[in-house]
Length: 457
Ligand code: GBH
Image 1 (cartoon, protein in one colour):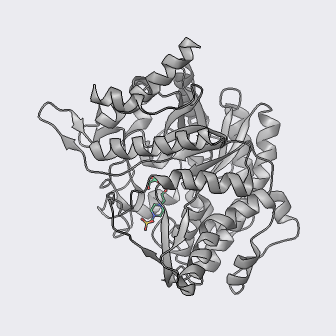
Image 2 (image 1 turned 60 degrees about the vertical axis):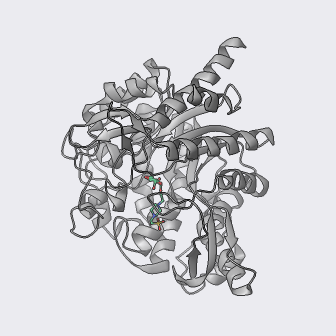
């Protein structure tokens, strides 16, 4: 009853898309099955020291073998949409060359199950699992011609699956995989090449995005096409000029570099200055090609960033300030207003046609009760307070069409392994038993309330 009251307190429009998100490497497992080729994440996780708990995604949630069960659970959660990613190496095991029919068939089967369950598929074409052979050739995204390989993969995939999948996302979080994977060594491929490498990889990935959009349009004339960025509202930690300028640089690095390129066809002037010694090769016409008209922008939002002057990501040179407050297992501050603030900021400065929150959620430990139920009040409260901010944004006229919770079920959290749990569904990784958490039941009630409104109208 208490849950039902809480669910009723959220007032969203009846046509709001409520979904959950996942990514191929984090859930599928079966890395050597169905003709799949190796990816950079298979390689990276098997190097000792790279993953906090020494684990990998070899099995993960074994989702590859559990499509029916997992789609049934989505239906139980009342989801109207599901955001998943396609593993390039399942489609083209060598990155290019022979097409693997089993890989295409796997995603088609998932799509059929979703459609039968009344769940709209939202497919992401790249959530960081680059085919390993393409990494070994010229360091992956540092090689400009990887753009052509990506476009080829997108062409094959959307041609085949476009009859059933209408929502396409070119990339998930350019900032994360380029800065943490190419700039630093935290994520695959663990290159550690600093700002120059991060910006080179970013430029090529942006170009790949821009060149892929018209290809998807041609293959899927009625497609909704977008990109997903991880954005943060940024505030300086103090009024000191050094902190204010560090906040500007950090904000330029994470947000404006990508937003300006995609929506304005130019890199921000102040950041071109900040980056002047580490700029990638930019050819004439690149920015025009990057700035393709899009149907939506997806935002992954977990927290705000309070920034002071420092030494991280040189020459961005920032340090993260951690205000007093509640923190998740990831060490991320809980600050629900961040969701409203980022939507407001993006809508005001870039006016995308439609917006989605493509990821929002929290890692907290689960308490398993004697009766087997899973109490996760911290996650439930995170979800409700953030959904309230989504409702507020819609009331203010921001074209927010949907919200996807990160994540459907506990899964492989990259460099943190299986330690943080983000799921609406608890996974026992020993037995692969799934249990819907309290937060999942709450989400189902919010979804049920929308369903009710729809039926009344
Ligand atoms: C998203 O990225 C991903 O899309 C998703 O796959 C992931 O599971 C989810 O969020 C939850 O993490 O920033 O100091 O904590 C998250 C962005 C940025 C998280 C890099 C880890 C490194 C350490 N990631 N970050 S820190």
